[in-house]
Image (tube, rainbow, N blue to C red):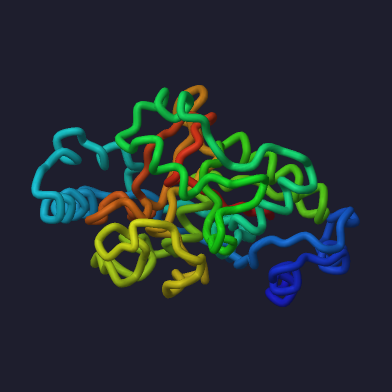
Length: 289
């Protein structure tokens, strides 16, 4: 597929013409559906995962910032894929996480419950945050929080993201899906296996993390893009992937606005979360072939 076709299908509003220009696509059922611009990830080899050098670096920066070695003692980064070279075909992936405004079109069209969580459900997750921390991210009367329309949508479970992908596919005629971990990782870090989208040295100026604040989500696309033009692949919000290491759990990647250090913000970092979890630190983006 030519690059110019990928530009046609991106942008704020998808059109029927754009959907019909894709080989094998069906006619879109809606001519006016907002979704993120996409980047084309070329076919080729890339380095996935991490080696002992990268993991040691991650542990060290965590210890410097937090003043303790909890991540090392719990071996958080030892579960990462051992660095290897693998070939992937070309594909397309959203340049930014799905935003509140983009998700709102799904909510309005389907009548689905807007992102929110009850105090009982939140407390059952056993997280360090009190329920009050969720209120700035909760929708009111089916509408996103004021002033956060172009922020990443959060308080969405993996199953919510799956349903959004199914809905967007039906509206655009493009077969969207949550990316597997390996596709997400290549798109964010590039082919050369660098530690972060910008290089091998952590730089708090390159992402939305707790090192600088504002301790909240920010509008998408505010920082320099990575090797293939993706934004917010490190920091901002963790993102759901389609990869599962045990039943009922999916890997999330990318780190968040609440993390410092930021070993966990490396594209190689990974950990599992329950598919039903709705968290203020987790959002998603989609891909298609």
